Image 1 (cartoon, rainbow, N blue to C red):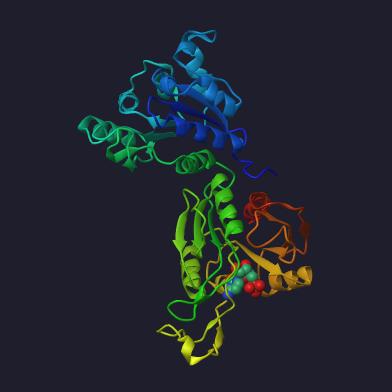
Image 2: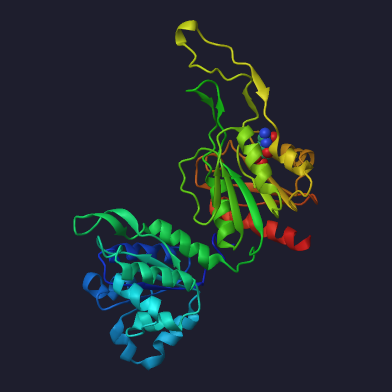
Length: 405
Ligand code: C5P
């Protein structure tokens, strides 16, 4: 199963209008294409002053359109064809002029015609120079578009092409691609399902400076959260400290310690369909964290440890527990025997076991090699794959279990 199977073959129209942020739109087209999305680019006349259709064709592998094409071979129905096939219309960058057209149904070029014919969600990323964004007409048009159901992302504030500083910069491509994924994913197989995913390691305070931590990067949990969003789920991500960017569209709850993670997971799991505990929760914490930094001069301290609560067991025991509980087991020996015991002890539906002694699997790397054990005793040994692919394989099983309940 490809990593983002629900996005593969989806169609997005990317409308590009006359702003210097056009060059960033190339990145959006490229990233969406890499996810398997078919991107039809439409440039306005002003956009072609900054970039050419060839620029986009080179990254999408598909024809990019400009106004002249409206009167080309396909005749006057080109815009209808493009709009009908679209699962999402993105206008990025959107100038004040194009915003005005979109808000008021003006259809005087290929992009604005397509927008009027479009019934898919509309994602708009305004980009304009200082003052233009604040103009009452622009503000009215944005409010109007929002009232019509459009999703406006940005603009951000910062350096503007004119040298001014202020609000008007197009939002970063990564954020726009995140929202595009989110809207393309709606209506997917996990639509209407609420999933809670935990990710990353926890940190247990020794004193105000030092912690007991572990090597979990959070990559596997974040990949599960992102793939669940791609598949249409509503996702709450309970995350320990990581360097990763939050998946766009997820509700993210940041925690530090196992106790905090327990509270956050219990709260989020109420009414959820599934809990996937990918986090590496510390089993032990210092029994008493020192209020002051421990002084080296006093010699090496002895730190007494106490057990952390088992979050999965607490959720398994709660009233109205999620229909599907998934645990992870990182083992360095006797992988399958330990994993099967964990599945039973924690009363889980699925358990993802990985051998952390392998260099290409487990902590910090982008790939994983796992065995998925199920309550019915079945075991699926998956080959080495990306963490996104592991996420897709796991969520396919979660989906099947939810369907069967
Ligand atoms: O027992 P062990 O820590 O190996 O179990 C790993 C699984 O249990 C993971 O899914 C982890 O998120 C979860 N866990 C938990 N609470 C703990 C420790 C681990 O829910 N205190």
